[in-house]
Amino acid sequence: MNTDKSEDDKTFDESRESIFIPGYTAGALYDLTEKVIGCAYSVSNTLGCGFLEKVYENPLAIEINKAGFKVVQ
Image 1 (cartoon, helix red, strand yellow):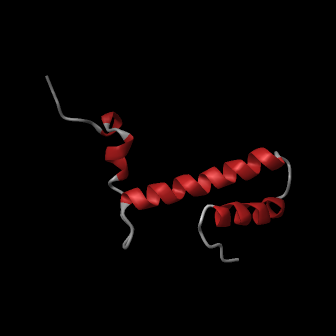
Image 2 (image 1 turned 45 degrees about the horizontal axis):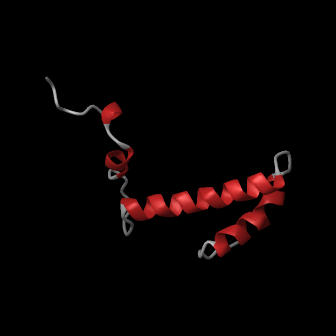
Image 3 (image 1 turned 30 degrees about the horizontal axis):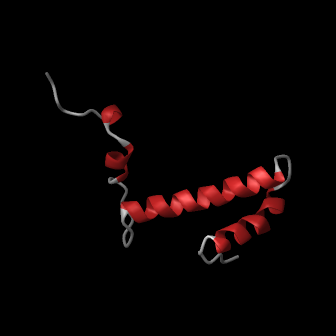
């Protein structure tokens, strides 16, 4: 019985540890990404689809600020 895990068998937690950006841990990047995507979904669900990107820009900045991050435009 082969107990070695292939790339397809790895759990998400194992595969995210391969992320490397100097100064950031994989967990910190995952948490940041999760929060930003959550903000984007919140804006998208509220406004709906069909608008130009500019319409979503300010509400997304507001949501990201409410999440505790600073948005630089």
